[in-house]
Image 1 (cartoon, each protein chain N blue to C red):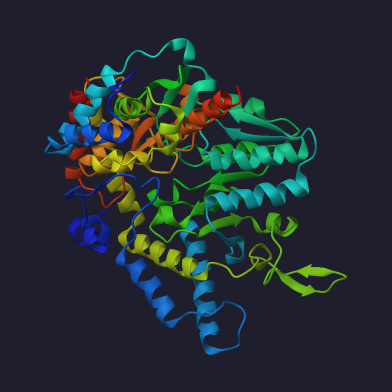
Image 2: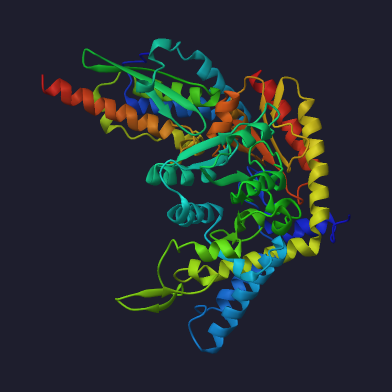
Length: 408
Length: 148
């Protein structure tokens, strides 16, 4: 598979990539935290505020009609991108975290009772732990945790044994933000479904790396954030199976989510509006659709292929630095490498790499249980996007080598 | 550690700024910081307990105060070497001072030696929290002392 554009053309689409930091060219390897935005998204957002701004679904006037149409066509773009069956199954939220909180609340209200169980995994981001803990606190339910192996693979044997007749929902990440592991979500879903249990898949770290097909995965909920997939921030998606979404109560009340309101009784609007109270982030949604279109035009399989090649170079190069340990060695990974150079503190390494113009993330990556599992205080994480180059990967490896000399 | 009791807080800050002014690039500055971190007197491991820890997302700092004859002696440590270097500088400035000197101090050296980013108000490394904690100890010792 070949990308539809050359790497030079791609990099020219992302204005921030040509900037300098500390007098050196920026090497941006913190894509797992947030991705950069192409001109196609930046210009569209600018143009929206200049010539297409009005509230959606409200007015009968010209501008409101235009924006409402574009907002609804953004929903269709998202639907097609993740291959959902119906566009009513796509709810716009503020981000993956907001989506998980929405499910934890609405699903929890409807289906979780005292003594019920919720399964998450040991490699979850805090966003897929804390909302469930809060739910467990409210309902006196119990949180069960699927452990992972030293390589960073979920222990599926343990998962099967955690499922009981009290299990109400399973919430797992598609790809780990620290270890990079791509989890066998299809298998996890099938196992849960055999027991009649719905599954939420956190796609915050998978959506940007290749083809994601929610119909194939057969999950009941799928969530992701716009800013991690080259779109604006403050916009996210909650995909939910129509039947389930219809059963669940709304988690926020307000405008647009209602059919009729009186002080005696309020009836709710249909999907997807039932879950979109208040003025939504319509500019964000339209911007997100532009980002998804960008990826589609580039070729999602080609994006994945390129990122996998860069990941292989980074992994091989870093492994050649003496004393380095890599956390997460699963055979199927997204382009994320977590590592520690010997006994050097990740903060020290991150500070020095920053001075070389290299942006990596250091710390616990909002996944403290993963750190606990390895008994470390944090890692350095390089997360790679298709717009990164082999030269940038070489610079990272050189930089890490210099760090080990400096602190060794 | 107690430093130059004949110098006031600002004189010590000026001296640090002067020390750093000889370095021409960041690499030298950081190497010097790492050296400074290594010169920090060993921290009594029995004080490495939650009471004396200042948590940052990135690195940990431990800070232990002693109040003796009207002055506060700070000992401190960090698990990251660069942080430990800055910790050493803060100890140099604040240790051996009276509570009033600490409470009234205006800390400007960090900006001037190009380490501002190490003191971002986010949860990065606990240094800002360390300065706050040093001031809180000074306030606590001061009010204890005055109510005796």
